[in-house]
Length: 464
Image (cartoon, rainbow, N blue to C red):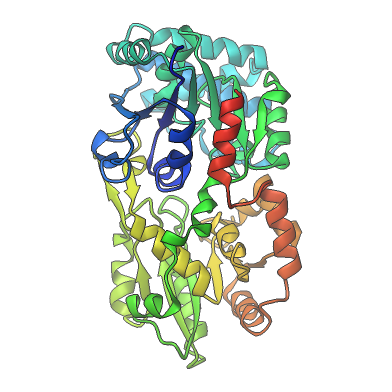
């Protein structure tokens, strides 16, 4: 009888965290005779965490670079998708911001793409653009190397742990050519209602919740409903694992925190959208200066090294900093941030921050959910608008995925420093005030228990 072979496609550091640093492979190795990891990361990153497993093969995928023709049809597909679904504010915003301001050669081509997509953006048109895109790289040497892997391994199923990276489209194309069944995991809560098109069409999809299932059916009408599986959110399962837990004493000692003071944690966005981070940190410092019983811990984005805060670190030595321990594994890549891989130490640090901080402040990120899972009050900052000269982060309040959060009343929204100070005071004095709303939002966004997420995913994979 033929061995059961499953292929797991891990594209980036977040996928590595969700599936390699969780119990996923412990569960998977029991159910499958052969597991092949098709990796968008260098092969050596797996040597430590997966060394005990004898039935795992690592295939490092060569980095695919798009030709101009491939890029043209991929871009046309994505813009057409946004025109088709421009009734959602997040997609409108992405569409408008993507329109070139200058008439460079590339800018003129993008403007031509917008002109075509404005009139030809039906689902049928989009499927046609994708077909043309896939045809452009079928004879590419890297695409052929992917096909050779699949011919050699003969997987029964491919599980893509991220549905968006366009540089994996050739790998999906070869899977389709070989008639290998594919399923994808919808990577994050905002991917469907504010991002562009998926990298291609999959046979099945894993989603966080019923909400995400409904969004998927809306944005991708050719998807078969019975092939959508609600499995929860793998990125949060680590918080239930004993190996990532440390005591409050260990946490306070590591970050040189004062036991007599409450902790406000500010979690940064990445540099592309966190342009007001410095302003928000200084506003919190101003609040803390009024009290001897508060301290500030700042966690920077895992997508960057934190160097942009060097001046702030010098000016405010009392601020404690957590620069996430994510290691850059490859510099020459179309998405360098995707090649940053987390350490187990970082998951331990993050879990401790969530467990032992008293309140979180962030600029409307998924970190709101992380802190709510530990029943901590959350304040969202949004000082910038189109009139005041700051980076306009208030527009994110109208994105559909965050509109749910705003309407849930599970967080407070601070549009200036005075409001931020008021909301921080509320959170510190009455931390239980929005407890019911926090739980309701988590139940709405995450459709299954955190504990056992990996086991649940593996059981569903077996049914496919």
